[in-house]
Length: 279
Image (tube, rainbow, N blue to C red; front, side, top):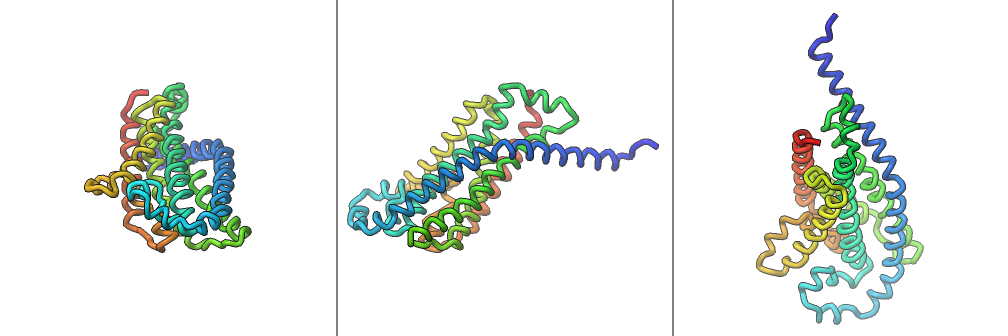
């Protein structure tokens, strides 16, 4: 009996999911080592802040910060350096997490697509009975390995280190911050994927994506104290505020929603372009 249309559709759907999960497992496994290295580096980096934090916050920084230009305080988050939570929020999370991890994810996402464009590996992969959409989404899903692993490991390591040094940090506040940072990291991964589809040259795409992260940070930090503050809304950094969470206990669900929408739009556009471009 000939195969029905519904049966063919179901078989095609299963193939798509199988391809997506296979690509995600393969790519995710390849990211385990670098994820472990980044987790260790962040643990050491965070431990340094926890160790020197009490010495810095007790050293009379208030007068020095008041004398600094507002733009400089805003750029580096110096205005919250009078507590260990403020130090972590303005330095470790603003520079290390938002710029560092965001930059890594954007660059890695761009390189995972553009690099294989340049080396011709996508030709071989897509020669089989697979769809372009399932391959691209599998690569995107694999970025969940560093996103989830770092989001779980870093707050636990920071809280444990702070406890050992006798200056405990609230693990629940850290957990909230990392939960709110998930849409932010996913957003940069989606932006990087879109860059990789458009640029199609591995190293160039990675640099463009990384440059976009630094440009977005500067856009938000530099103009926030000017009359052009509204332009900061174009930067994903506007929608995640570590000092707001750790220092003031603020939870910005609207910002998380905006980042989620941007991620979905960028991912959908990346899939649309990837399906229509010549390899």
